[in-house]
Length: 187
Image 1: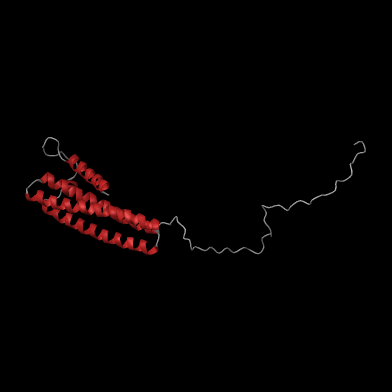
Image 2: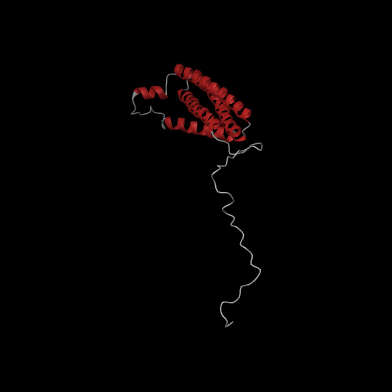
């Protein structure tokens, strides 16, 4: 779990680092201003969007916990393991996002725009991933289990017009005890 959280953090950090200019100059962008506004909103908007994303992630955590309870009640180990894996990932991403939100607010208070953008990007990426994990948890409950229950009983109805007997087991040959007379007298 810690390894996955580190990977998510590394991806978010690399994305934020790739967005920052190398020499400290203003970034050159060919994109429309609306795209820049969406990727790097003003600081009050970052705080609002981050809080909204955290709220959505907390709701997703509640939804996945509900799915976990459903999987437990169905007594299906495959479904339970699948949902539990998604739950673990959601918890890790939420924890990273909460820390990133606090760090973003500190960076905004210190007027460190690049740090604030970096932390905001982490929250945004985690929010997208949590939404995906919520959908995957729902799919976990829809999949068939590959394990059979020991108490499972199967009723088979045999049609009456089928031939009797087992076609794979031929009739036993007739045993001949006496040898017939030779067909030729030369023997």
